[in-house]
Image (cartoon, rainbow, N blue to C red; front, side):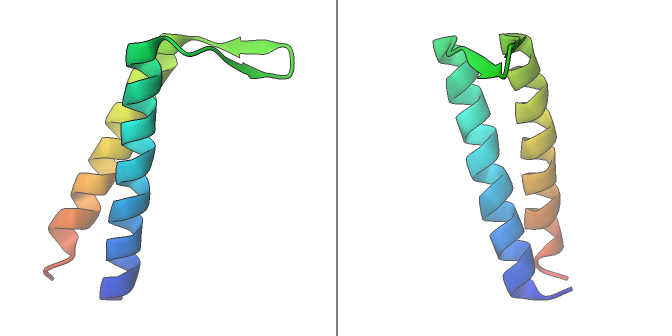
Length: 62
């Protein structure tokens, strides 16, 4: 796997995880059309994105 790809993936998923954590902590509302996305969904998204970031970080040395 290309090292640059892994670094970019790690950075991207890290930023997504950080944004989701900030959104959840500040209770910011998110609406997609008429659907309101609950705050608890951001906690799940943060865990998923954080896990993908950690996975990319661990695989960059291989």
